[in-house]
Length: 68
Image (cartoon, rainbow, N blue to C red):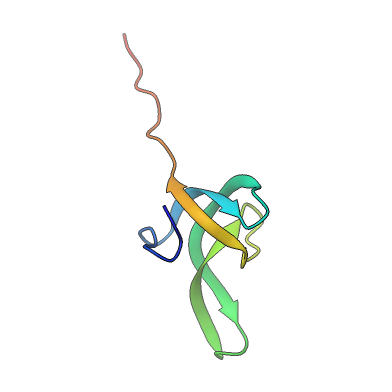
């Protein structure tokens, strides 16, 4: 899904694609924004660093179900 079309629910784990075509795990989370004097919601990588170049995202698939 294009980042300009929609954003996921708060604190949602996602798969991200950046403007160079790289694909990696991330999340939609709060990050500190000094220019705003507080926090904002943004896509972040697994280390919690904001990914400003993300162009697309998709939710992670559901975990596999255990069949007995």
